[in-house]
Image 1 (tube, rainbow, N blue to C red):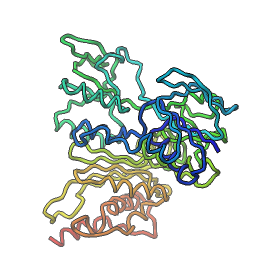
Image 2: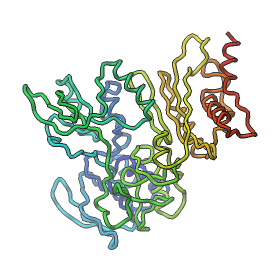
Image 3: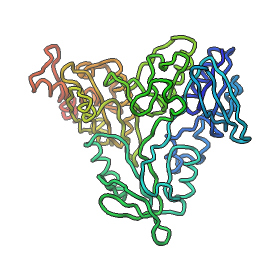
Image 4: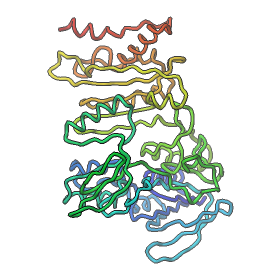
Length: 441
């Protein structure tokens, strides 16, 4: 079988590796328009912040590594056209300009996404940069060396309460945060300054970095396979498109978003590697079903960890899902320990079936793995009652007798009891661990 993979970052790399591991006899040809593969754009901040000394460390594979596995890797080759009915591709060698045709038995589309470039006047100014690719990261690093005032346009997705805390943390570190400001234009100012025009006045900076999201790169299959309103390719439970000979993975396609039970466009590296590996398996037949995602992610904000999984309250309401929220404000381990840190958890759940819908975390302590635990709970359809008493380790060095995930769930159970929606099989012990902590002192 001849399999062509178009695009080779996370999803394409995972697909090729999986195919050649399980079916070394397969013919695998990869077309990638850049001169590199497998770049971890989510690690750019580590390089810019000086935690990683070499940007090249953000590559976890190479054309040579895939070729050693048995793939035919064509970097700096751009696919110009795909005819899904004829199973043909038109490709250009970007170094020589030569255009040629190729064929496939099965096609895996892992063309990724592009930075969503807003229609702003002056977006092509030399001091307005994008942030996604290896080359863009290099440009930011070199440009920022000689520029002290840097503006960031766009700021990700978290709930309003957590956003307020993040804003305060940014301000405490000298960052000027301007909410509800819409950029309308970039223009050159005096002495080489960049003027940023907004709906609430003008500001000056030395450099602007645009991070306003991503759009799927799917023009090659437009009108040939089903897509959603974002232009993301729609896939089934085996990452197969509406054309049975074409599979899709990564930022070019939707995900099955478990908290809502519907498809969504959620460009994350975690989704890409899983979908890519599944494409490598299922291209030979329906072997493993796609489990879907909770869109779990985390970031380090100065000395704090901010993590999220599943739905925020606002997202649940927008999806017309019954939802309630509880907030845990405490510490991650007992106060009698030599040190601890404040921990805030927002837990979102459905009061009708008591299932967990999402959670967000903020602490100076590393709590990202707790977001993974909640992701599993959402994946498995667990309720607040389940989470209240699920077995977790206890040692004062790590947590309270009831882990903080138990405690926030117990708050939810108590909230439901007070609202007259008690589960008669469960009794809430939301204050037990706090009282025990006081008794031990």
